[in-house]
Image 1 (cartoon, rainbow, N blue to C red):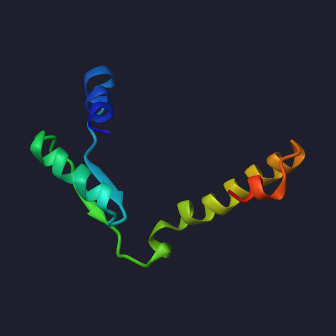
Image 2: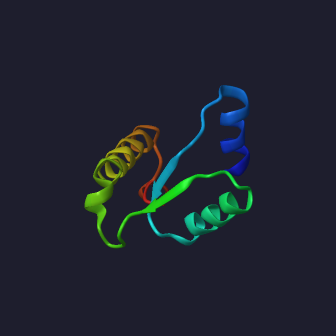
Image 3: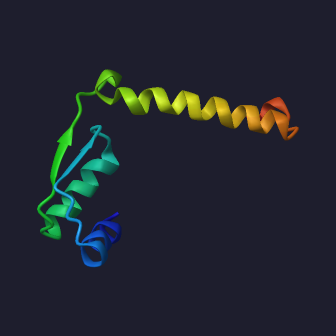
Length: 84
């Protein structure tokens, strides 16, 4: 993720100011890496167990998985493979 953030600045002159995410371990690691690289990005964490704060994403995932399962059904995948 750090190389992507640096590329956004170097190539497109787009500086990321805030990153909002849940309080998962990989996000905390990214926060520490950004501090070490002195990127000046402010991390904002949503409260755990509150999908309401991520409402758009929380609604998009089931819709996306439903479309994917429908395409897999149309392609002839068996139920076991569709559910994985």
